[in-house]
Each structure stands twice: as structure tokens, then as C-alpha cells.
Image 1: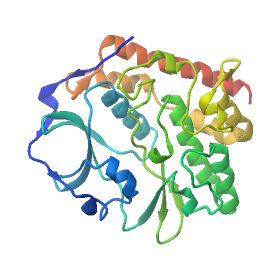
Image 2 (image 1 turned 180 degrees about the vertical axis):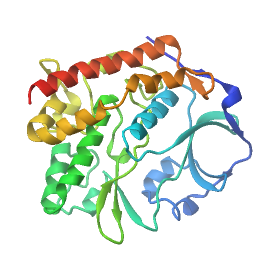
Image 3 (image 1 turned 60 degrees about the horizontal axis):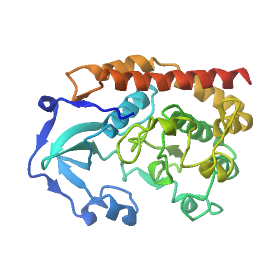
Length: 298
């Protein structure tokens, strides 16, 4: 079934003749792989801020903004998105959240720059490898970083994120202290079963298909469930029971349904029609049932 959203054009800011930044200028503000920058080159200087724009006029707008609202309610750092009309294209704009004066940034494709033993090839590692590598390289303070990584992994499971690929998750390292932290939540437009083409695909909700599998690379191609439980989440719970339970309880500590209800008002740039809202609340119910099964195993 195709679900959609309603745009309220009176609430969408219009940006005419925006100042687009040359790639070399972007690199003075943003720590980004130049190869990735060639693909994502829609950086602008807007209202005195370096900002990224991506044209979107479908349910990916809702997926991104709802994910942001969820992340902020949980206390995660999150990129802030606004719906705008830029050069006659509706889309999402977000201010650059990096502070390259204080931090170095590494997406998960660049982890070999921090951990010498880590794979260099794209998308060829598991979340279990990452957690074990963190413990090996940071024997004195690994637990806090592991918990943050697990919190974000469970967040991706809860929001049924389909594109949590290594480019979409960053670690940041303080230049002064060397401390590593998980950075902002961003680029979550393929949450809740939203496909790359901008449609809700209920078939993709049957089993969570994370871009980074937990234990086996084969989970990516042939995911499965055990007694109605996602194999990735079950394996995570077995290896890190206390941290996984902490993450699950944190995820369900806020009223997600109320957050969804805030996107039904005509006061926002977009609103959720009744059928779309019901679909999204159905996902929460599905995840709550799975969470309850997981917690009974501990």
C-alpha cells in the first residue's frame, strides 16, 4: 500500500537564489570524504550557516523528521531538519553540525584510521566486530562507547532503519583529549519501511534488514527470525545482555505515539494523514511486542 504525507505550503520557507558552496569551501567547514562530497555536493550558505540540502517531496521527509524528533526525545545528538523550497524544489535542509576546530570525524568507512586492525573495505564488517575492536583498543573506558553504539543500533532497529550504512554513522574524536563518542543522528529517511524511492514498503517490515548486520555478514542477504525475534537483536542480547536491556528500556521510556501525533497538525510544514499515522503506530506496536519477548529472555 502507498502511504503519503500532506505538505502545508504556507508553512514552508522559500529560498530564492541560494549561495551554493564550492566543494573546496565545504571542506573548510565539514570533515567529509572528498569522494562522498562529489556525490553529496548540495551544500549552501543559508542564513549565515553552512547547510546541506536534499530535494525530497515524499514520505522520506516524514521519516527523517520523525526520526529526528525521536532521537532528540531520547537525548541523542541529532541533525536538525527543516522543510524548505529551494530553487523551486521542496526538500530538507540541515545545518552543518560538525565543529572541526574541536573534533575529528570518522564515518564507519574510515574506522581503520582509528583502529589499525579494522577492515578497509566498504560494508565488510559486523557490529560485533566493532564492539570487540572498541574493547580491545580502549580497555579502560570502552563501556561508555560500547553502550552508545548499542543504543544507536537499537534505535535503528526500533525505527526499522533500512539505510544505516557505514557512511551514515560517525564517531567523533576530541582533538584535545582523544575521547571517542558516537556523533549525531542523521540521514534516517529510510526508516519505518521507507524505500529509497520514497514509498512505504510493508514487505520490508517483516524482518529488519540492517545495513550493518550484528554477527554474520550473511544476515544482510538472508536475515531470519527465531521465534518471532530478529536474529541481529537476539544475538546482540546474548552477547551484551545488560547494555541491550538498557538500550531497550531507554528506547521505550518516552511516549512515541504522542510524538507522532504532533505531526498531524496543519501548523507544521507537513502532516500525516490518518492511514499513514495508523501505519506508523502499527510499527511501534510491532516493536513493543518484540521488545517484550526479548526482555523475557533475560
